[in-house]
Amino acid sequence: MTDSLTDRSAPNTPASGDVHVDVAGGIATVRFTHPKGNSLPAALLARLAEEIRRVGAVDDARVIVLRSGEAGPFCAGASFDELKGIRDARGGKEFFMGFARVILAMTRCPKVIIARVHGKTVGGGVGLVAASDYAMAIESSSVRLSELAIGIGPFVVGPVIQRRIGLGAFSAMALDAEWRTARWAEEFGLYSRVFDSVHALDSGLEIFARKLARSNPDALARLKAVMWQGTEDWDRLLEERAEMSGTLVTSEFARAAIAAFER
Image (cartoon, rainbow, N blue to C red; front, side, top):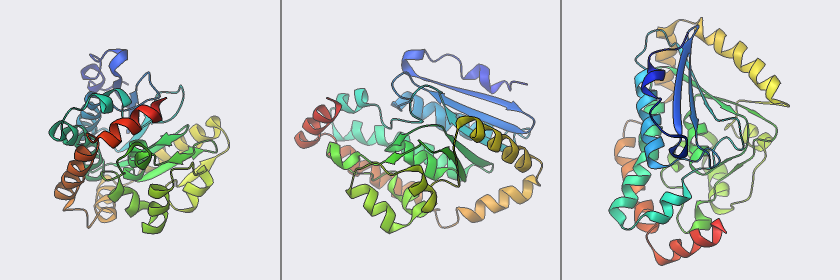
C-alpha cells in the first residue's frame, strides 16, 4: 500500500525536485528526484529531512530504503544553480545547513536506513550514503568529493564520511577530487555490498530489507542508537561546518571556481 505520507510529498514541481514516500510490508521507500542529476537544492533537502523524520515515527515502517530517481547518477550533490545564487555568508550557511539537517535526520532516525545507490554520487550525495546504516550499490557507482575543486571543502558531510571510512580515506577523497570506484568504496566501508547489475542490486536489496523488516524493531532501534553513539554533539559541529562552507562559497575564488567547474 501507499502511506498517506506520499500525498504530503506531491506538491513539488518536477523542476524543483520531489520526494515520495511509500510504505509496504514494513519497508518505507523514500525516493528523492531532481531533473539535474538528482542534485539537491535547499527545498529538496528540507523536504528530504522532513520526510525522514516523519517516516521514522510511522509504526508500520520498520526499515527505510533511501533511493533516488533512476535516470543518471544517484546524486550529483549540491545544486549548482543555488550555489551560484548565494550572495552572503548568512545565506551560504543556511544552504549548507540543509545538508546538516538531512544528516541529523538520518542518523537520529530510530529506523535502519538502507541506501540504494544505482549510479555515481558526488559531494553531498556521498554524505547521504555515509549517513545511511547500510549501503548497497552497483559496480558503476563511483564516488567523488569535488568541493575543494569549487573553492570550498566537504565540511558539513565530512564528519559522517570520516566516521564511515576513516580519517585517512576521507582525507584522500577530500584532497584528491578524483573518482573512486565502487569497489574502493566497499573496501573502505562506504558501501556494504556491491552488485554487478541493477537487477542484482534490487534483488539483494529486497531480500535484505524484508529480513530486517521481520526483525525485532526494538532491537533494531537500540542497535541503531549504538551505531551512532558519540554523535550527540553534531548539532553544534555541523552548524559550525555549515558556517565554514557558507563563508567560503561567497569568496571571489569560489565564485570563479564554481563557474569554471560548471563549464
